[in-house]
Length: 337
Length: 219
Image (tube, rainbow over all chains, first blue to last red; front, side):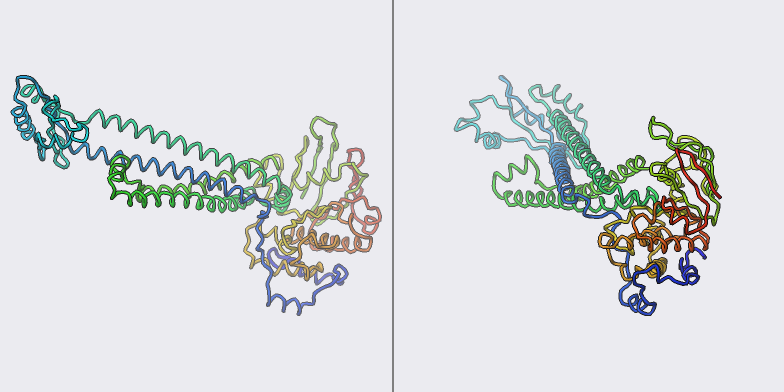
């Protein structure tokens, strides 16, 4: 009999009493009619769905994805805020002029402003007048007048876009020509902010690593349980000639689906949380407290990049789930064989 | 087709349960494997369908030394062997049709290429009306026929049947024997493990007798 053709046809013809093997044999005509109406289909999954503790695993993956997404969102939010602060600070430096006995502070301010204006890359110089200083400090002075306090005066120096003035030369000129003046280019604050941002990023990466590890372990344990439950299925698959890749592929498909479901739930909840936070912070912006919060923490918006990162996290969780199950199945199949 | 040379098998550090087995199974041949309970028939069958490795000796299957083969090669060889288990080993979550079609499914063939073949075989073994039934609701005889259909659907070169008549009455056992004989005539080498003397007396075939771990061949 040729392979691939109807296997038993010739044999069937050669056997004179096939009916003896059957309790009831379906006549060919009847079978043809049944075939036309409803052809049998191989629709059942190789690995029975009921043997997989799907809901529990989906819940675990959803929680892990939520935690990972919140971590990613938080890191993105902090980085965005820090970047905003840094950008603002980098566009402006400050010259402080201390009041010194025996010196005319207004003359010192005028001279320092002139030195600043002469530096290439400076877009604007704005000395704060006595009145400006009064207004700035008024909330903290509680009725006192500025003349009673030795408060330094400030000159705001705005840097031209894309320019990088020579601050060292400016500092030196001020030191030589206006000794009470000092330049604050916010370098120390920016360095602190860099350190803080890096620390937040490192903490976020650490949390993500732990969450991923916990997911891998959860999926590995779940896969082991499923394999133990389906040991007979795996044995039969081996006996009919299934390769390990075929068996592992079916388990992987199941777990990929579970990973996608759990990831979508967890990631969806995280995205909803960020969207809600963005809406609330937006509505608060009109209030003075909202403006202060926005200045301090940014807008609570994770932006397009943040949303993309959360979606990538969902896919990552699904892939991690699928690959972990595949790897676990492969390792266990070695022992089964 | 199959060659055993001085094959021995022990479980763990225990004594050898099979010793110095040397025999051949030729293409198109028919043989019974018999012996008292505990003689090692099932262990020998497991070595034949590559479920168990020998602790010593040489097994050659379809010209391949099984000791040197990887797991994927094992799978390829198993596709040339049909196995009927005493306890059927049907998958309860699949219909009779799906159980019988399983060997084609693992080969990656499209359903259109094997559907007619499976339906025709199921009709032939009398399960045409039970295609959508699940194994738990099949009778013992129906399960037996479904298991045999699964073993022969891919036209194996070697059919191994472990106590295939253990769960059926003598009349049905005769019918099954006739099925195996017909399969053998169509080119499949057949090895039936049984301790049913009456069954063996019905067909004049080579006998492999296991006794106290040794194999005696009666041509």
